[in-house]
Image (cartoon, rainbow, N blue to C red; front, side):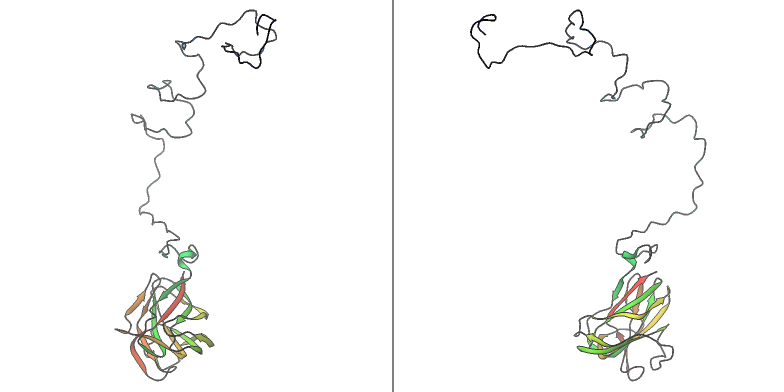
Length: 282
């Protein structure tokens, strides 16, 4: 402006200056006099009422000689400098006489002793053990022994066929060893028979599918198997009949014999059956 309520005015313009003010609760009528300006320095004494938030640093002394009536929701960071004057009113329970067993680690691809197909199917179900798919000999079939390291259930086989094409496959089983039972059907049970198995070439897995019934083998028990095919099987020459050729946490597969014919004909020893056994641990 130019003059007091007169003269020329200019717009827009920004006033340059400072306004001092206080924030007060609303009253029914304005105060009779102006309030003083706030002090520039803090007061010498603290307020009579504690602040609602804690200080940024811990105090050097406790706030009171008496403990708080209610415990804090979380433990203190540091222990007390001195032990408590009295022990706890009740002693701890009597310790156990033997240590607890280590918990099983389900999902580590190993079926541990505390695990089975029920409480850890990812580790103990759908197990498989392969002997070898290398070969240097062949005949119509193999007999061999499996010894269980755990309670197991055998459900499926795969073989290494001698020639391609459709052929018939049979699997027999019996408890214990096949010794003195190579030329007799007595005591053997037919648990798989399929006249139209599609055989792959040598060295390639030929799947048979599930057995007609599952074979339960108790821990430390042995079970013999006789696998035969009209297309023939290939396998490896072994080193010693009934010696362990392959094993895992569930079973041991022993070296066995080769056969010519079904419970008749020549047998060859030692021979390593070539294939896969699928099972689960109970």
